[in-house]
Structures are given as structure tokens and as C-alpha cells.
Image (tube, rainbow, N blue to C red; front, side, top):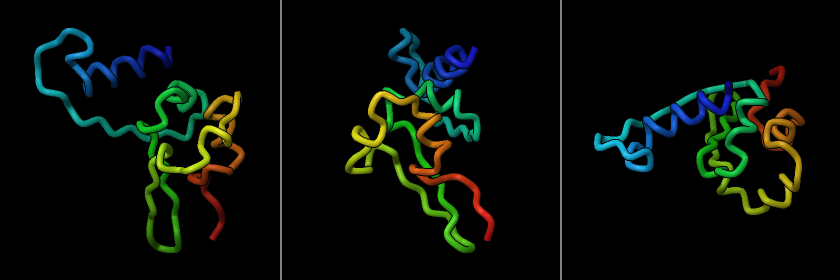
Length: 93
């Protein structure tokens, strides 16, 4: 079912790729569900990690990390995120 949700988001954002003639829609989705994040493993440019720094939030596109392919290896993206290596995991402050 998660793949269908991902595909629906892509249809909204990239309608021409699905043979639709309409304006694309900017899609912003948030999740803490690692299995949903797994759906975007092949497209790290689509993933933005939000990190709380004090009272501020810092956003980082996953594809901007210089060593992202080495970090990911063969592991599922959600599993890597869940370990905290990528950031975006709530912590006590």
C-alpha cells in the first residue's frame, strides 16, 4: 500500500511522467514511519531531513550529504534513518 501512496504523490508532483497534461503540484509530506521512507531510497533528492537545533529547525536534503551512498550501502533507508545516523530523530532537550 505504501508504494501506491508514493506513486500518488509522484503523480501530483510529476504529472507529465504519468501522461497527464496539467500543472504539477508541490507536495510536502512528513513521516516518522521508516517503511514509508524506504519507498524513496532510490531518490534521496526527494528526502529532506529536519533537525531541531535548540529553538530552530535545520533542513538538509539527503542527496546533499557527501557520503550518502556509503552510509546507505544495501540497507533500507528507513532503517538507516531510524538509527539516528541521518538525524531527524527527536531527542530530549
